[in-house]
Amino acid sequence: MSTDVSITAPPARIRGLSQAAVAMFLVGTLAGVSGVIQDYPVYGGQALRYLLAAAVLLAVTRLAGLRAVRLTVREGALLAALSLFGLVIFNVCVIEATRRGGPALVGTVLGTVPLALALLGGRPSPRVLGAAAVVVAGATLATGLGSGDLPGLMWSLGALFCELCFSLLAIPLLPKLGAVRVSAYSAALAVPLLAVTGLLLDGTAMLRVPTLPEALGLGYQSVIVTTVAFFLWYDALPRIGAATAGLFAGLIPVGAIATGAVLGLGTPSAPDLLGAALVVTGIVIGLSAAGRPATAAGSPAAEGRRPAAGAGSPAAPASSPAIGASGRRSP
Image (tube, rainbow, N blue to C red; front, side, top):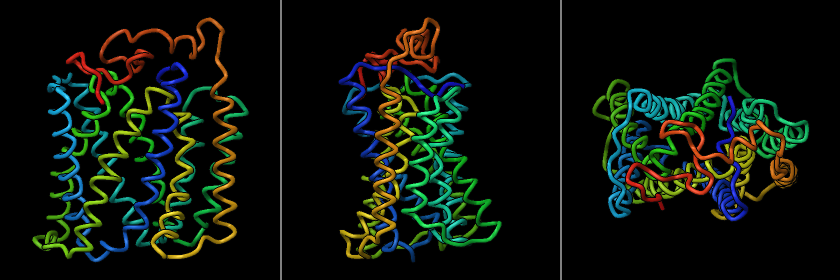
């Protein structure tokens, strides 16, 4: 399976690279604000987070004039799987992995996302594999290996699988729905799933009136980490492909380090800074390899320049990665 959706023109590629970098950095800031909501019921809090994010994203689709799109059975199943694995189960895995092995363990495992996406991309060049390995090494060094037991490791591997689903399951949906609708629909579907989980595990205690810091923390998660980061990521995928975008997952621990420093939670150590430098180095190496055009007939790069054969095709037109059924480009 090829994870590269299209080969885009330089301006679109620059936009995609910038969006992927910002999206993953924002996801990294989540660690810095998690402390203020650590006492709030987890599943109820996540349900509120996605409820607010879905409301904002659905309002954006209305303001942008993006009409509702009728999905096929296959597309509906993909969207449901995206929400279930990429959002709901991902959060459960991260929560359980953190409880058993601490944030360092799950952060280290998630740092292997660039390598996993590179391997899933088909036949990655040695240069791309080497770049992904450098990013993984930097993310591991910046996060710290930490400690944990076997269950913690298994929960972390589950989070890694769900993180891959977050990107790969969205690729076939983006040409038809666009980034805004994929983000809005997946967030909306996550709300009842998390609410049911919260009721089963916490009962009526799953919700309570948040304190002001908790409300601000949940609001940040909803608006910045979910609404903004989701849109940027999903808009970047058709422009640069999942394999290239995956390199920026190494910025997650960098975002966490920067947020911790800004909030006064700790000064970055030498391993933190060295790890961040390795991440940036790996990204530069990977982008220099990914930016080389493939000219061989029938190559994935050549095929990526062709327009999509249909709405359900995993390849989007290079000039229109996010055009929905309404014929309008999502913002």
